Image (cartoon, rainbow, N blue to C red; front, side):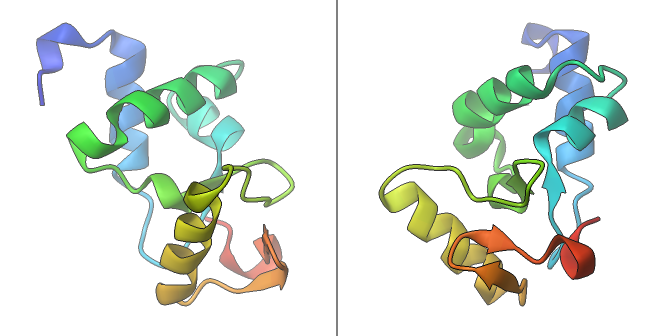
Length: 103
């Protein structure tokens, strides 16, 4: 990780993201809160979008506050598949069972 190139907020978000356990999900807002920035959910989305591959982040374990997978096209299918492979259950086609799988 090129730590010195990242803002403190980004470092905090990366630390939170790397603590999401296998088989659990959290929300963009909860990641922002846990990183000490309760209004930073949109920035969490940007960080995930730009750094997931580079930092090998568990991007697929983050959903919106309703538990919905919101990626478009192949990304949505990939996220759903990765979550299902971890044993995460869904209450509908693209909405995670947050009662049982939210961190």
